[in-house]
Length: 144
Image (cartoon, rainbow, N blue to C red; front, side, top):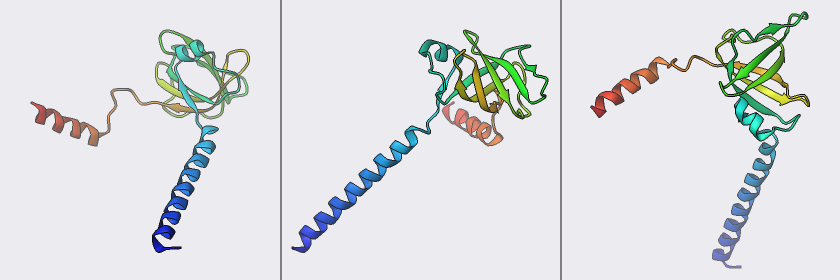
């Protein structure tokens, strides 16, 4: 076999191996992907029970209720158009409070309650790291 043909065969094998690796990685990640829903989206799309998703929105005012065990809480997530009841067992982040943003990871049960396995409290939407704020001010001054 000529050297030119050997190179073509090696290049073909390398491309096939890279495509195979990409397909294998995509297949493995498909099961790990968690989709993000707002309460309105979750109700509209009828998210199936047991499917791992993320639910994001605001914690409704006066909705946090602590159960007697001391570590289980129930609260309502809203997007001001729809609401979803959530149950979480564990320690909540310091920023978790009523009228604040939250992202809950978990799954819906058969009754429509979201059973959270992890709670991520969001900063105020107006919060901006100092470096980003400085960069935005520089950009604004260049535009003017």
